[in-house]
Image (cartoon, rainbow, N blue to C red; front, side, top):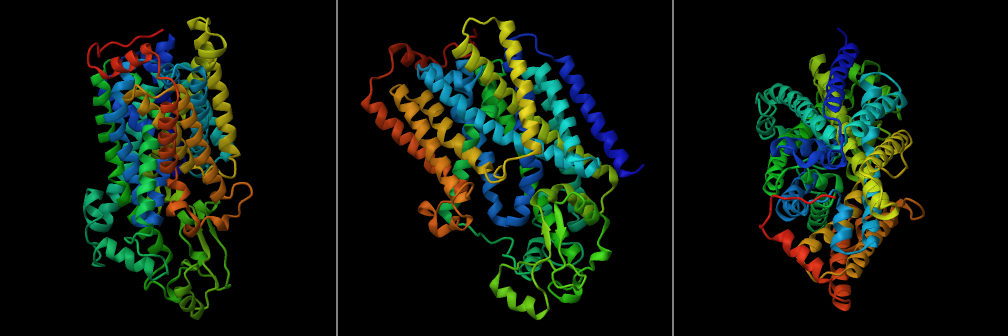
Length: 588
């Protein structure tokens, strides 16, 4: 059986499972559509939360980032896992006890203002669409490579599958589908990692393989990798290339951004009791750690395999570069997607792959007759191409394709539901037509989800030029706008609606403006995005930390200058924080 047919079978079977679950668990009420009826078991919810969070970015991109950034990529591991600790301790139990359906609803009630609720809706929709564009693009890439169809076709199939279980099943359908998707994605991620770890180091656990010696007698894996990449002019894999303040700022922005992401927070409304919210956050951390502790090994081994495949024998010698006409089959297959490119700059027919931006290495390269690096490799192919580079069996490659699609679709579905509930519950029910019936609200939610699927598909097919640049912006936005408002809403009785709205808008505007300025999306030249020009040496990826600090400061000052919240709001906050009546959740 060839790889294409095998991939169709594996991916087709996984789709059949997802759609079957959606029909079995379709929503019959707004409670089931928004929060799965509040009856999901903490372990199942932890698994679904893991799938919701471990998107195409975690499955496809994160190990690719680690592969090329090396030590510098550790900020993503620290920030994205640390955010869950914050969620479990500071937000999840209290928001679950509050018992409403959406984050904007909490902000609207706590700050006794429809305006605050609408600001939260705007933040939520912007964050969610930024994310979902990346997920749908990931679906398109996987389909185009493994099923050998056009990206457009892949997107349409992906949209169709998401449409069925997001629109039909609502949160109830999505939750149980995500449990299945977690199982698929974790198996698909770890099995190739185990194969490659055994192949290179003899260790079954990739986590141990990362710190072990190579079986071919080449020494320690990381020492050998450092030699391989530095011989080609790249920075040592284990060296840090960021300042301490920037590492801190990026990690903090990712942490509090995670804790402020609406599609993650809403998962904690789906469990029966407050204690279950804390428990499911703990389980989510365990399930996420299964992938996140493997990712550094996947990144390092992928970089080692890629570089040593392109460079045969002695690294950095002109005769050791492989001849382009004799390139391996995996190289040819990925070339067709446009995600790996070769340009023969010196006409010798060999592939020169090195860091041509390193002036210290330029003289050596010139002596070899090299005229610049001739290979461009997209970060996003590293996890997907890794099993092919390592020569693993076809069934493993097919499994990786199914896992990547599961990761992208699980997050896309969660994001689309958050968008639809914000529109139906917060905009229509909360502001425009408060007297609408539950049946009408459910219909509006489904229509909103269908429209959101269409927009997501378009963004995946034709992403704005800056989508790849604003992944950090989505975190910065959540960190600088929603996180401070939620945290202060729970732990302070004195924060007023004027303070909260002013703080959210200040943090949002500052973060948006800073990234716009340095990322050069419209006017500013890209050349400005250099460390010397950054505020306090903080990169655009980490500026959400400063935005959050501004939000906290402005909120505090404005709250001091305005009238204290009404007594019923202060009583509400007291009730959220006290354990009495912790098992109940009031609905509408």
